[in-house]
Length: 84
Image 1 (cartoon, rainbow, N blue to C red):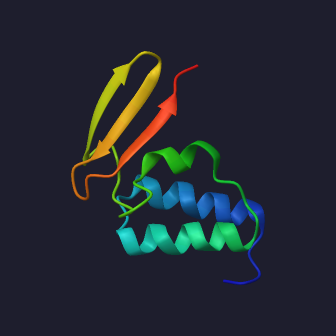
Image 2 (cartoon, rainbow, N blue to C red):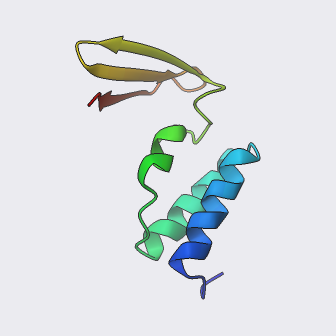
């Protein structure tokens, strides 16, 4: 897995996000991307930063004053993003 290119890492991440991956797999993919200095961009908003569970399935979304709050139902971690 060490000799993977950036395109291959990006494809792995996109492929695994569509197949409902386990939190352990997401953590490994994120660490791989960080070790190879590959930006995952908008894909990082699709899972919890703390427990790595997928957001559309396991989240509560609130929008207030131009800020999107996503609360993970599994661990309770709140992620906040500005809405453009």
